Image (cartoon, rainbow, N blue to C red):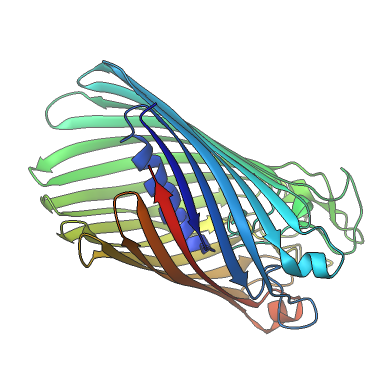
Amino acid sequence: MKKIAFSVGLVAAGAASLQIATAQGMNSMQAFKDWSLSGTLRGFYDDNYTTAPDGPDKRGSGGFQFSPAFSLNVPLSQTQFGLQYIYGLYYYQDREDHGGRPIDQTHQANLWVNHSFTQAWQASAQDSFVYAQEPDLAKDSGFALRTSGSYLRNNGSVKVDTQWTDLLGSEIGYQNTLYYYEAHPKGAVSATPDYDGLLSRMEHLAWLQASWQALPDVKALIGYQYGQVNYTADHLLAPAYKFRSDSRDSRSHYGYLGVEYNPWDNLTVALKGGIQYVDFYNAPAGQSDSTVSPYVDLSGTYTYLPGSYVQIGFTQERNASAVAGSTLGGGEVLDEESSTVYGSVNHQFTTQLVGSLIGRVQNSDMHGGAFDGQTETWYSAGINLSYSFTQHLSAEIGYNFDKLDSSAALTAAGQSYTRNRAYVGITAVY
């Protein structure tokens, strides 16, 4: 064992920051030379921990989080593998004051393996598991959701990269994602569908991509993806109309072209653009069962000073919807089409002081049912300052903001909310 870490702080990371932190966490694991233990104690104030709309159901609470963690990294001659486990205990004072269960618990586990068969033929696999009630972790249909029960997500993938010649390469892969929400029993009938009936599902995605090194700093891409979504709850989403969870099942075909541009060591830009054809093969009778939409994935990273960088991106894709919107003869909401702009800045003011700023805006259009064409826009932002007194001791302060704006019909259905969180803390590592 090389190091043991213990940290104390106050934090409430927004869903946008969680994505960035998760990606950085997986990358940082690869830097560990052996294994480490850590313990984190954080306190916070959250003015809408239920992610409820303004009204009697909106509740604020102070509290704390305790998170011990374990990380392992094993580098071998041709193989690297690692794992990470994080336990989270969240205490909410407001719940105890009102006779509720004051504690939520979360479990996160990550596993990865990289293997080089030869210098030109490499394979990798990874798995990420989350079991939680915390809405930042249960970010499913685009924005953070508070669940009445526990939420489970498991995402696993495997891919093989091959460099056939100096100019030509390929990538083939498969990804499986399972979502499960604890709610009503299987086959249950409810006047208001729960997240189990609306969102519990298994997603499959397989892809094949070819690349051509057109110029020393330009790589051209062409690819195809096949996706399948199967809803697993078997609930009646609208008892009067007999629509069940699996009426949202779909198959997707993606075709795209892309480019990776790396003109300098400190600048990387990647773009994929094409179309997505979706077939809702179990859609209610009389409802449009197919659609074509654009598919875009744009990202860029610029390191302007040592330890300081900017990341920006844009995506256009389809995702699951937490809204039913069932109508007689009009079908139901089958999914959403979302346009998302995101960005982050990490700036190292001095060797001791580091600041970060994150932001995300997502606009989603409903597809089908009573809310066809209705929109939701989710805004998320966060700011953080961290000061290192020594290599073993640092302090942090920050704030996160989330806001979901829905069109009139969706607002009446209770979709909109605003959430503010603040934190301050200290971290010790040795």
